[in-house]
Length: 324
Ligand SMILES: [Zn+2]
Ligand SMILES: [Zn+2]
Image (cartoon, rainbow, N blue to C red; front, side, top):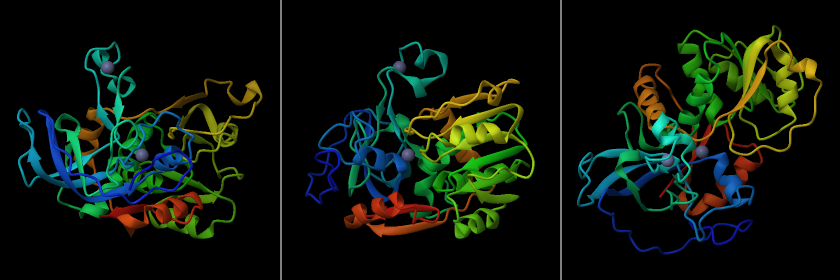
């Protein structure tokens, strides 16, 4: 499925099977998750996609062909392709273990063609082996919702009481990880989303309520996955002294002003950008131990537009996954 122009539906097109470059692998896509970032790309909120573009950066597939200098994966291997598709390896960020901030980074399904397709090529150095504990479709959301969720959770340090605003794909995965680590989760959903609140509790959340409400006790940290800037001052109000608000999304509406008192006492706000390969290594070791179980809703690849619409309307429980 191809995006030809922002703010238009994806089009089903015949694409030639790509050839892998020297360090690349050709992958037959078995499943590709639908991420909120894909919505931001299609809706034109992320302004610099390659066009035409095949979206999708939560890819699980099988290696069909390896490039002349590729050496890490063999034909037939099961691999995952994440959002971070390439980094330069030489800028100040790459050289200081922060390749997620690389000046010249390329991103799968944004500046590189992604997984809303039957085949994709990827630089093998940025692919991950996928644990056998889950099916292709169940594993797909781990590639972004899982990885970015994990990086967001790590940004909370050793916070014991963690609030999560926006209980979608990332939240449903990271709640399981947080519970495994002995933390308590407070889930905030859209107002009146009783089903979503029930879903959060079924995954181990100690409390679930509307995003307008305050939790029963102050939080040590809050992670915001919903792209709504007004949640930042609300989350600050829910924090204990020294707490952090982590903004886990790539795009957010403007943050309204708030009194300094909300930030006083060493509260802080930070964002999470992209991922590093180290995050991936850590997360894919951890996920089978938890073990993380994803809740998915599958769609045939040809219904990518319908899947995006469901996500936009908040109708997906867990994660949407496309099956070619
Ligand atoms: Zn770099
Ligand atoms: Zn994503």
